[in-house]
Length: 175
Figure (cartoon, rainbow, N blue to C red):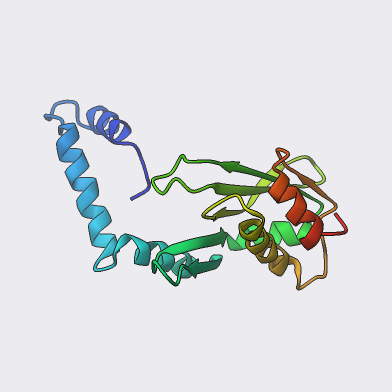
């Protein structure tokens, strides 16, 4: 349940009980799958993805494509990250990993920096494309987090993604 790799579970079991026969990789896979299924219950993967942030009290938004009925946009941020971001909204570093997930959608990571140089994850978002429309949705959600204070980041650090830069000029015009 803690996300420990099967090989690490196998090593820990061997260290704890070297005299007993060790489970095979297949046995460990089946057992972890059974545990995940027990946690998930009757929910499908999409329902689970939408339920977990609610249960963990994350700040989250999502949109569903009206035609395909699939989740098209999702934004999640841990409550502690929100406290840090509201305290230190000065610098935001944004980067995406492209086509590295099973949906082949960009996963955008937003990272903040404290005055002492420590970095922290502000939020993650999955969007269908790296278009201005998608970035606009994402940045407006980020702005909603700060709306309570009326603060705005001074600096955004990006990888020269033109659609992101254009959208930043619209949503965070003072940055």
